Every structure is written in structure tokens, then in C-alpha cells.
Image (tube, rainbow, N blue to C red):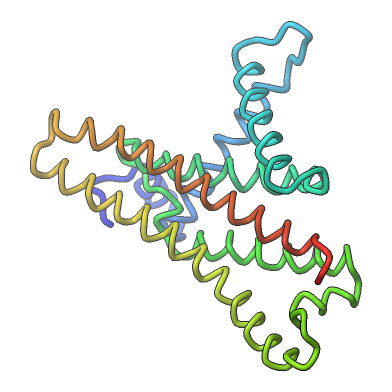
Amino acid sequence: MVHPFMFLDWIAGLINLHVGEHVLYTWLAMAILLSGAWLAGRNISMVPGKMQNFMEAVMGGFDSLIENVMGKDGKPYFPLIATIGMFVLVSNLLGLVPSCFPPTASLNTNAALALTVFFMTHYIGIKKHGYHYIQHFMGPIIWLAPLMIIIEILSHLVRPISLSLRLFGNMYGKEIVLMIFFALVPLFMPIPIMFLGVLISMIQAFVFVLLSMIYIAGSLEEAH
């Protein structure tokens, strides 16, 4: 989706920096997250300020979600899950800021996130179970193992594709709808659509994180 004006593209043009817009706004999302972490952590105290309170509430929400979905075994993967969740949420919300482009409306960004989850899932499974991890692909009946291995491998390979396309389709579709309403009725009509965009951004971030946790939790389970 082409916006009328995107300020990072304009700045990149001034300094002759030739990278994709999804890369530029990925850097912006990273800068926002790093700035927020620095502001929240620079003066940690027993009587927290507003920023510390906000970040503690967000991190507490991630901690509760991980424990509810993955159990106690999911605690070591809190940094991975929380980082992915915060990045996806901030990237989604950037699309609601005038002259900004949401990095998650690009298939490149989403594929990178999905492949990270894919490789981490199997790395964690191998680390947890060693060579016994292969039993996750063999099914419960040994004589069906050759067929089950093919089915399981295909189902695992589809995961990063579905993660990427689901997020891309929703965020790109939101961008199209917003731009159409801005073009037709530029003053008041887009406001309720923007509130809907906030809801979509939060839901899609939650879905991406939830599926990532389910995949990782599955690799931690004992094969039956």
C-alpha cells in the first residue's frame, strides 16, 4: 500500500539510503521499544513512576499469558515471547500513525518473525529431548510412522507460512481500508475505522504470540 507521504522514506532519500520501507519502519519500531525499555528501567524504584508502572503491567500480562498457555516450563522463554509480542504490537500500531508504514504489512518482516519461531521451536525441542524429539513426528503407532513423519513434517513446514500470511493479510487489509476511507472522507469517517484498527492490531499481535507459544509448548511436551 502506497501512502501519500512517509517521513522515513523522505529522510532515507535525503541521505541516499536505499533500503525497503519495511526495513526503515522496523528500525523505528525497534527504536521505540528500546526507548521505552530505557525510560522504564533507568530509575527503577519501589515506588514506580508512570512508565515503570506501565511496563510492569505489560510484562506482567505476558508472564501470566505464558504461564497459562505453557505452564511453568514456559518461564525460560519469556524474553523470546515478550520481545516478539511487543515488536508485533508496536509494528501493527505504527500503521495508525500518519506518514508511517507498519512493518507487519510486509511479508518480508512477517516471514522473518515466523521463521524465528519455527527454528526456535525445533531448537528448543531438540535441546529438551535430544534425539528422542524425533518421536514427536512418528505418531502413536509404530507401523504408521513412515506416513506420520511425512504428515508431521508438512504440518510443521506450513506453520511459518500460515503465521506470515495471517498477519500480512490482516495488516495489509487494514492499511487498504484506512487509505480508502481517508481518500473518500478525510475528516471524521476514518476515526471509528482507526479505533477498529487498534483492535485489529492488538488481536493480531495476540494471535501471533499465542500460536508461537502453542508451537513451543508442543515441542516441550513428551511424545506419546
